[in-house]
Amino acid sequence: MTNDWTQHIRPPGLPSRVKLIAKLVGFLAMTLPLMPVQAVLIHAWPAGARRFPHWYHRRVCKLMGVRVNVEGRLAQGAPVLLISNHASWLDIPVISAAAPVSFVAKKEVSHWPFVSWLAKLQRSVFVDRTRRTSVGGTADEMTTRLAAGDNLVLFAEGTSSDGARVLPFKTSLLAAAKPSRNDGVASTAFVQTLAIVYTHIHGLPIGRSDRPMVGWYGDMDLPSHVWNLLVSAPIDVTVRFGEPVPLDAFADRKVLARHGETLVRAEVVNLLRGGRQATD
Image (cartoon, rainbow, N blue to C red; front, side, top):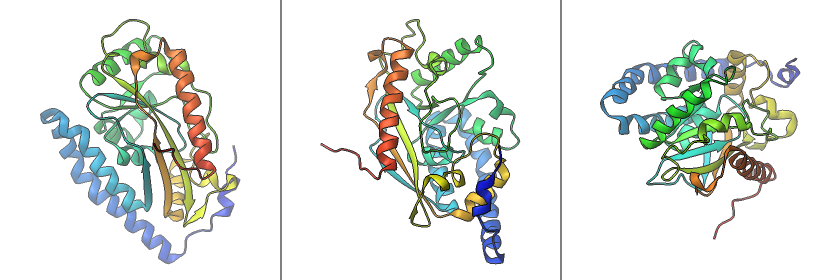
């Protein structure tokens, strides 16, 4: 895959480079001291460990120039499985800034330099997509986490896209969320869809040709994409929560996948067209 889209981004001048370096320095200055704080919270105060990344990522987004518009809200008083589309690495801080959540991530992330530390401190659940036998273990971990009151985000497409469409949801990924056996969690856990769409850069609507400036997919290089995205800020993004539905309302993973894909696709299309969420 070629990154022809990079030709639309001018190399930053000296003022922009200084600003970008200041952002990176600010990110490290904030993040490095807080990493051991979260590590302590995980062991000493689980409730605090759930909320601390939410507080942290709200400040990360502000530092990066990402303006998060949240529509709807996360259900309260019960654990929630959020089924979301996936457009960029930026989805992680954006969604975490919108609500206190952990993520279901591919196992490879657990080996990425530095990123793996952040993912583990976010208390991510790692799934090995190359081994079907690992689904059972992941299901057990998700069951345990939901039973403990955690909110989990599952990117059901299985990969990221350019953000201008929603890829078919993979029922194999939802097997961990909705196993065939009765695990005792379905009676308390809820499912909510989550649509995330990047809408504006520097106040201008993002067109299809501009989507790769935000979307990170295929074999795009991560460091250069991060750099170019910081050049592009400020960025506006909308995160829209669907209505909560009891997990036990779904007969199996296929029904759950159809429900999630239908609603997420409809909300993404609505947001891309500039539509607002319906209210009572």
